Every structure is written in structure tokens, then in C-alpha cells.
Length: 328
Image 1 (tube, one colour):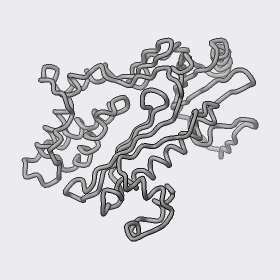
Image 2 (cartoon, helix red, strand yellow):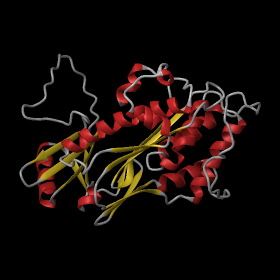
Image 3 (cartoon, one colour):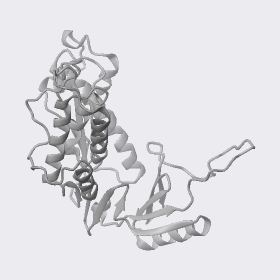
Image 4 (cartoon, helix red, strand yellow):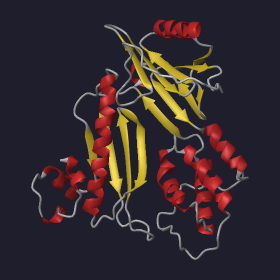
């Protein structure tokens, strides 16, 4: 959205946000009259008048600010610093381990510095690079017959990789799979984790790029395997959403049920994706950035698409849970 309009994102930090005060009284807190946050995202605030708009996103003691004009942003900063002790960090370049490069109509988010720290921490700076994060034919499981891995070491390994997923959706799936075995890691799991790091070394500058594009359509993509790991046979869902350019929302999660067909696995995922699309659309409407055209969610299973369009229940869908038919 910022790249779309050529806006700069600024950052402020609240000093002494974590006070350790001992209270002896009962404290009642009420939202000030006239203040209204986003009902879909409670850390997002908007100031809007007939010609200008200002966005403030709050994370603990950090504020991200952007809007139509630098004048509006500067006025907000001055107002805040008159009331609170705050540091003006200027145009955002680094936030929670993420590096941000802001051009006129492009916005790059990556974790190059953090990726280098992972290589250094696990002494893999000189490891051989590899072109894929996972062996496609390899099926990871709890009982793989391999020797037991160092539980603390593997947990640290996977924990570091989990945070890297904030800007690296290309490792989302395999890190999610490995995180299921942190309580019982084997040497196979350790080697799989090291393979991801070898892949990261060869793609250390990768990130997510947002650019100005027309039209600004909200678009989702979803895919699911079927009868996944041998341990529980539950499918794994994956989805991502873009708004003109660059994906900004993505996820990968094991389904709660054991799907009895590829169509059911894809249908369950499609329902999740549509729910998320509606939530994202609510936020965009609140931000006065309603996307042009209808929301599209792409599914690669023809049976799932047919079931979604057909309002008649039949034998092939009798075992589907009622909640999944929300998609219709």
C-alpha cells in the first residue's frame, strides 16, 4: 500500500515503556471518547479527513507512521513528543530484525543481517550452497530409524529459522514441518534443518518486494497436500495473498482433520483462505484502500471449485463438517 502511493514509513520509539510500578489501587481504564481503532486489527489507527489520511501501527513501544503528506506526519510526531518521552527514528530502515529499503514506488523487506547471524551462530558461513530448501522426495517422520539428535541444539536451530519466515515465505513449509519434531529430533531432522541454512546462504539477499501496480487487486492462492506425514496422515495447508505486487500475508499449517480425499483437503483450505480474505478486506475498507474488483482466491483442485459452486449436498460431501460449507 505504501509503495502503491509512494509514501514513506516513519518510526518512533517510546522511552521507558516498561515501567515496573507497584499499584495498590484498583485501576479502571476506558477508551477516550471519539477514539476508534480498527475492529479487525486492534493495533492499527487511522486519522482521516476529507483530503488527507494518516496511519499509525503500534507494536509494544514502537510506532510506524505513514500518510499522505510529510507535514501531517511531522505534526503527529510533535504532538506525541509533547505528551510522551519519545525518540524520532526518522524513515524506517530497520524494524524487529527486518531491514527495509524504501524507494519512491518500491518497498523491500528482507532479513539479510539476521540470516548472516544464523550462519555465524551455527558455524555454517563456509557451507556449500544449495538451490532448494527441502528434498521434495524426503518424507520426515518421528520414527525414521535414525539416531537421536541434540534436542536443545535442534530447537535453537529451528527457532532461529522460524523467525526468518517473517520475510522468507519460501522456507515457510519446510520450517513448519520441522517444527513438529522439536520434541523428538533425529539426525535426519538436523540434516534437513542444515539444508535450509545451506539454501539461505545462496539466497541471503532474498526478501519481499512491493511495487506500484495497477489495478490494486486483493488476490489469494491456496494449495494443500493430501495424507501428509505418516505419523498422523493430516494434510498441510498453505496460502498467500498479494495486493497488486508482492505477497504480504502467508501461512502454512497442519489441518485439524484427516481428509478423506484431495478434494476435502483443498476444500478445508479454501474455506480458511476465504475467511482470511474477508478479514483482509475489512482492514482495507477501514483504511479507505478498498481493492478494485472482486477478491479472487485461486484453488488448483477442480472438484473443490465445483463443490464450492454447487449448492446441493450429495454423497461426496456428506462427511464434510458443517463449518466448511461457510465457503458456499
